[in-house]
Amino acid sequence: MTDASPTGPTILTAWKGAHKRLKDGRIDSPAIDARLLLEAASGATRTDILTDPYRPVTPEQQATLDGYVERRLRREPVSRILGRKAFWKILLNVTPDVLSPRPDTETLLDVSLLAFPPSEAFNVIDLGVGSGAILLALLAERPAARGLGTDVSSEAIAVARENAANLDLNGRTTFLRTEWAAGLADHSFDLVLSNPPYIPSGDIPGLDPEVRDHDPHLALDGGEDGLDAYRALAPEILRILKPGGIYAIEIGHDQGEAVKALFDEAGLPGAKIVRDLADRDRVVTNGPDPRTTPRPS
Image (cartoon, rainbow, N blue to C red; front, top):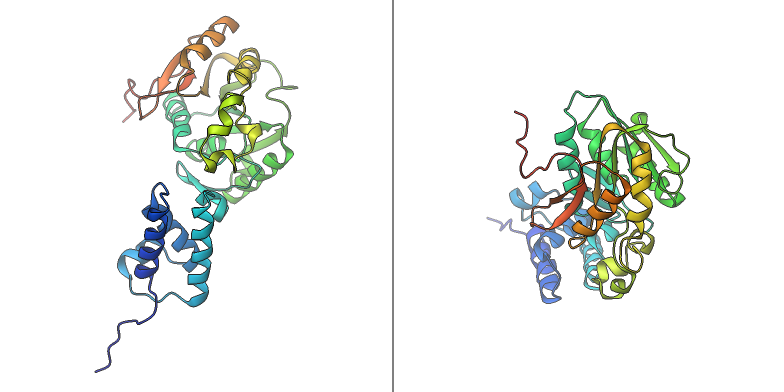
């Protein structure tokens, strides 16, 4: 009887090798990163890795995986290596022109989805839309909603527009190159969202290389105290928000009271701080707090 077990690299041995290299290189989440890179290099799915671990890996696939691992060891994020990133329930293309979306930002969706029931029709704007992550994730959950995304970067607008088309959301989404809400009509949106730049300029050199060297500084730099964007946004949100509308704006983990004070001073109604799953300040909003508001059954 011939031994049918493979003698060359398999999905399992390729994953183990990539995992060890990343772990030895002190990369965060080496197991997850190794799996994502292996899936991309080999065409395998997560299910394949679990159910068919001895599937052979070709020399070309192994070489591609090795190249990906080398890039990750140089602290290039997986999202930059692969050109895509999962966020909420959608998959987005990402380029060096847009911020790679973080799980922390999903707190904005927690607030918004509680504020607007699934069947409700409403208009939403995402100020500084970037890849389109926030806006498109929301529209995917709320089929009666329509959205506008603004950004000063024409390159970011192009990425967001492509993501909208890929998700078949381009029929309900418009994108505009402008600074925040410049040129938009007063009292025109039921929901205003934004994840603006909020890192103090002096803190940027000390950020992890994955962020400092690969995210656009335009999407990171919040000025000397990190609050420049909020000073600009507060009066604009007040201007474009419909009476009774909801706003939800992401903040840095230590900026809650400062941003709330700016919003209170601008006359924005009902500003309060919502904390994320790690119990850190994450959103200033007048909407529901997901930690204290029961979800509808």
